[in-house]
Length: 287
Ligand code: C2E
Ligand code: MG
Ligand code: MG
Ligand code: MG
Image 1 (tube, rainbow, N blue to C red):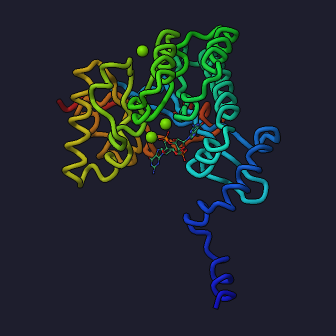
Image 2: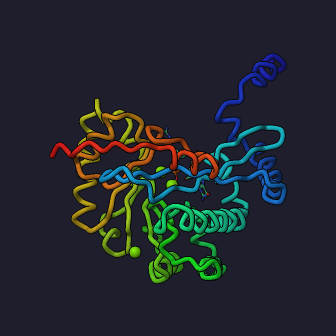
Image 3: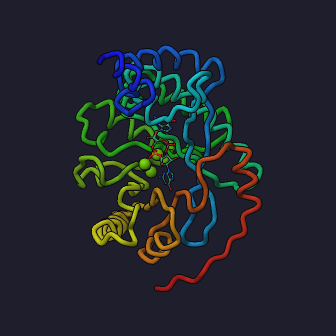
């Protein structure tokens, strides 16, 4: 009966339900207060150099501690924020947090530290002046453009809207670096890699996962690294969880790695402890 179904259903909060319209409306409303009520925080995940294991970069990843639902994944609420336009305010907030953080870390332990922030297509398509607000903010903080790396997905490059390309050129002009996130999962023509000033490709974690047992994934990773280097682009592997993956990527000349093998995304304070307590052993490259 429907009643039974209803009862059963209450026990399972399935991804489909997460996605339901009602749920989205509720989330959208809650998200409006989340910013004002300090329910959002930014975590940081280290990006490790595969040359010497040093850490000069981190990715800023948004977290939402909802007062009654608990932790909600950005994979769930970012799409909601994109739909209702809140992504603009949220994105600007994340940017300011990241800028303050990179300023502090540049002063305390690494003068060339960089923090990357994710920028969703909706932020690029927005016609407002937020790009200049970002530049002004960095300038006020006394930070150069390259203190921040902007991560975006490759699909954006296919967008024929002139706003997109002009914003990308503005970013490069201001000295900010650009990373193509989740590389290999979207649709993009390789020609775009040359057309735009792309500094990093981030190999999607689906190719890195199980690399040691998956000949196709391995072939893809190795070819992406080779191609990127020929174009003068550096490569960051995402989702690195095992030492075998680390060893293979390093042997293939991958520049950076990010993943649970090193650290999950953690609060800024924990990040500082992690960096200072880390002992780094570097084995010589086998090739
Ligand atoms: P992304 O930018 O590709 O971020 C990488 C995701 O992979 C993060 O998920 C991170 O926690 C996860 N990850 C890192 N290392 C590993 C690993 O070794 N294994 C596994 N299984 N996962 C790993 P997270 O934090 O849940 O973020 C999901 C997505 O939400 C991000 O994917 C990004 O697209 C979006 N996002 C997060 N923060 C922001 C933000 O401030 N603004 C925007 N526009 N999007 C954001
Ligand atoms: Mg990212
Ligand atoms: Mg550049
Ligand atoms: Mg990614």
